[in-house]
Length: 316
Image 1 (cartoon, rainbow, N blue to C red):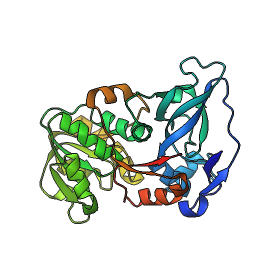
Image 2: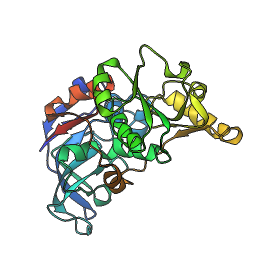
Image 3: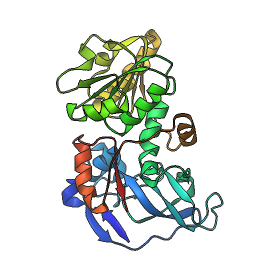
Image 4: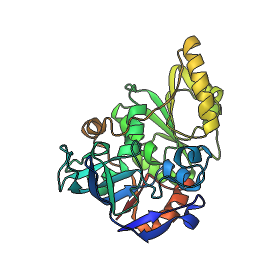
């Protein structure tokens, strides 16, 4: 089978290679999935490069523990382990598998049956591969959103942002998106009321205050975000700079004692709420692609540079 393999950390286009390897055999609690679509995520950007160093602590200090990246998939069950009862041959499935393993940049993957769920019939393979990780980051981050609030999304032109805007608009919120000006046309089409080019303006210094800030980048200090929140406002980050995340964790706990403002770091629960997300909001992911597997090394670099619009999807 075809797979994207790397055996050392480095630049994606230098260390990731398309190789023919043996098709895996599922264990008793696993299913073999024929991968139809997959997508690019932050984990792939960090894992392949081994940067920041925390990734090497998580995924192999001297060499990669997982030699095939990829954490989201949609596909068809081809073989079922002897103890699997929840899935069967021919089922269309999808999910974020990062809680158990990686390896979706391949034509086939053998995976714990509990790491994936049945795909709704009306969801294409491309849409299904784009939805689980970014969709649930947005959904779980905006769990407490209310009607007609003032919302800001930082990193609004990526996968999380282009899904979060749909949730916010479901609640008739006024939404500001922060990203590069190259994405503004797409963002306006998505429904953003206001757009800010982070290269030209710092949203924490404009004097505007928000009920909710959803941050996909976390490039600033906790104190900067506090200034941009209303008295009862909530800031939620779904990822970003490690140093700032540590600061947010510390100040978030301390602030909860003295203020009604909230600083939160989302601990994602993979695949939890996928059914509700589909039923409540009828999400349509903004697809960048679909591309071919051979393009994955270039696409990881493209993703890491923040040039993508929505979710970068690859079809096998």
